[in-house]
Amino acid sequence: MAAGKITAAVASTENCTTLRTALERTGLTESVLEWPEPVGGEWSIDLVERIPEVVLLDLPLHHAGAALSFAQELHRLRASVRIIACSAEARPDPNLLLRAMRAGIQDFLSKPVSHDALRETLERFLTERDGGAGPATSKITLVMGAKGGVGATTVAVNLSVTMALQPTRRRVLLLDFGRPLGLVSLLMNLRPRFSLRDAVENIERLDAHFLERLVEKHKSGLSVLAGVHVPDDWRRLSPASLTRLLSRIEPHFDHVLVDFGTFYTSEWKPVFEMSGEILLVTEVVVPALWPLERHLSALGSSGADASRIRLVINRWHRQDDEVLKSVEKLTGRPIFARVPNDFRQVNKASNMGVLLVEDRANGLASKFEEMARELTDNTSERGRPKVVRRS
Image 1 (spheres, rainbow, N blue to C red):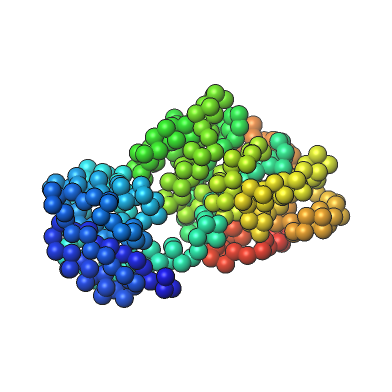
Image 2 (tube, rainbow, N blue to C red):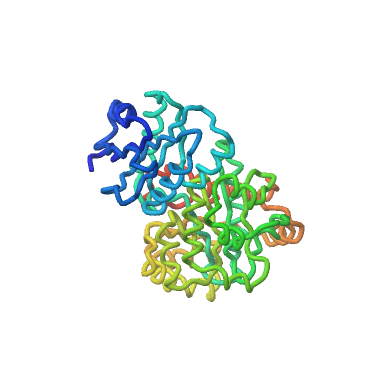
């Protein structure tokens, strides 16, 4: 495939030539297939030689059922396909719009198709595609503990809120994968109505509108999808179902953070493979440092890119630095961040449901701001982990 070029197709109930010409005029297509309306008014996926990256779909305002069914089948066979609907109205009926989104349609253009609007839509697709596939452009950050009790949830909660509060006002989601019960909602003083289980059990309905109903909104602007309400809910959840959930959720946010917990097996490999960053939280005590090498080895075997795993030292004291030099030498990687120890503030925040970053005077807020900037800046140029400067 030529760099900066798109494979495309036109599916139209009218003359495909007009839409094909519009695509070719953008200068961004490598090839354009034509799928005219077949006899009987319904497209068959059997007619498709290969599913391209982008499909320009003629969406009639009346009798749109066949086109929507075709879009749903295309999306099922190639989840990454970008389906652009062309409608006679700039703003379709809300009910039709909702049905279209559920069928996998991501963009709408009004007919006659504007050259500038079409080119802008394709350029946006190219930006997403050519930024790289997989972890290089993943917006997912896992926060996990080297063992239980090292404060990984505290890090995940405060880091995600800090990201949401950045001047750019990014759309940030925090998911609670904590087992057997997550603590994210408790630390944030939220009373969630829905949980991971609700999202997984309604995965086919999980469009932007339905997702908005499932998440809880924190006052910072952060969206939170709560952990399970009872431990038995994990019987209905699997690594495969949560991998699919992440795939459906990721396009709707600028950043997705996951409070992952500490437990994993080889079944979690797809989650590690799709994550852009993995923050491995530990502290300077023997039981928390001892597992590091084993975690790094296990995560590497499970598909996690070694350059994406970053070590976070929680409850850090300055006198810990001599030990941490040995840790850096042993693991072959720098410490990404040192979060200072402040038991009084952390204990107060945990008991009162007040976040550490809400108190600007405690010194921890600036550390989370450093981490947030490091994770959100230069996302297209991720390479070796950088060392966050010490306070």
